[in-house]
Structure formats: structure tokens, C-alpha cells
Length: 102
Image 1 (tube, helix red, strand yellow):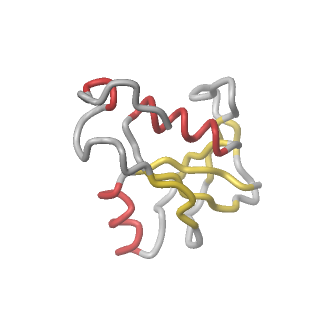
Image 2 (cartoon, rainbow, N blue to C red):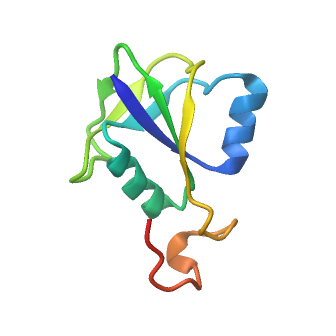
């Protein structure tokens, strides 16, 4: 199953330095669900990865997809989206940019 993981530039740098995303890794079933979670949390990067035995989380779902838990480090991932329109620091709801759309 392909999962979509939301992250920040700082966390992505740690993933690259360690050559892995350290377990547990949460992800969404659709890219759109991940984009909505990024919008809510202020994260700007979405990675995709394959999970063989994910567990469905009881929360974090939205109407665009479901949230899953991957047990085990993720060694192979691909950056599929980066929103460069968000400010580098702070939550998007605190952003002075009005009408920001993903």
C-alpha cells in the first residue's frame, strides 16, 4: 500500500542524514488527505512510501482519506510535493498570507 507522509524541511534533513524515516511512520491513504493534514499542521512536504503491513489509526482521518501506522523504518521514499508558498516558521493559520491555497 502506498502511504503519503507529511513532514517539514528540518525533519526531511534528518531523514536524509540517517538514510531512513525512523519507525513508527504515519501516513495517509491519499495524497489529498496528506495535503489537508499538511495544511492543518503547517507541514510543507509530502513523501510517498510503500508499506506492506500498515495498521489503520483510530484517529487523524479526514474526508479525503484514512490515516495509517507503519511499523518499521522506511528506507525508500520519494518527495512528491513541496509547498514553497508557506512561511518557513509558524502555523499557516498565523500566516499573514490571505487566501493561501494548496
